[in-house]
Image (cartoon, rainbow, N blue to C red):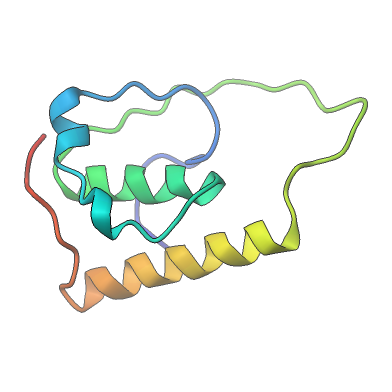
Length: 98
């Protein structure tokens, strides 16, 4: 939906350039938790940052349960839809810093 080349926006290691982080509109972020990773990666990409995905393989969980709740899933869906809607309407506020 967000038209990003990375496929897994919530997993793996992320390394950020200082300038990229400085260019994010921190006061206007919609999210926290897992979806925070999606939103910041989306905004950095739209701000011109180069995003590279290096696949990693996780072993299936043997004990315990997922930390994902319905609330987290609904929040992520709402934020992703809002980001795309803001982009379509030209309401993304970016500093164009890479």
